[in-house]
Length: 259
Image (tube, rainbow, N blue to C red; front, side, top):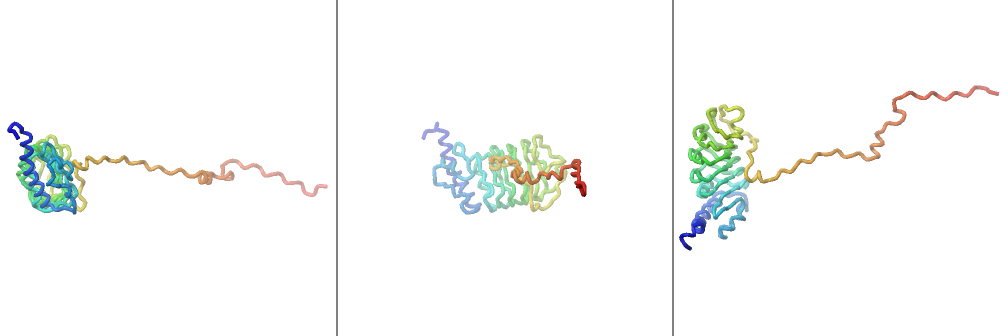
């Protein structure tokens, strides 16, 4: 291999690191039986296109979408910070616990981060505010606590979606200035303090994620009332005696005792 063959060098150098990161994540996350059985890390790296929830580009993982797989544990998430070309990370509706790890190694690439409906706890870490390329951030329906870090969130000025609801966060957010914000259940309407509270038993739905948005919604069919059979329709027609109108005069009686 020549020095000028830069693309191949990059791919070959990245494979062991990515294999190690994914293997460590799979080993630490558990999940339901067979959830990540398609991750055959002994295969050539080009086979990653067939792995559950993994999308690769140029020998690097660019998307990791693993939703509703019962992935659990506090030590799984930190391994994903080594996927240095990751643009989309969606782990919603799992059982992940512990604090949000340091994802700052993804600061130049990560654009979508969905961690809702887990059991993550602790404060929102300062390292999260280094992800300045984010435009979707959903941390709702966890056990996050502490004050809402307004100053840090203001650094994420590309955000279109911000979801912090159904946590144990508290504090004022009236000073939050995110000019592009379009979707934020926790901040609408209007901007006000968020009281500390426990997550509700039936949390609100999260915004569409890469997996849920790909599903095409089926149009609802209008329920048509079945036509009554001809016999039933005829039976509902009122009889002639029931028709409103003048009655005909009675027939004349015959004369009595004629001879």
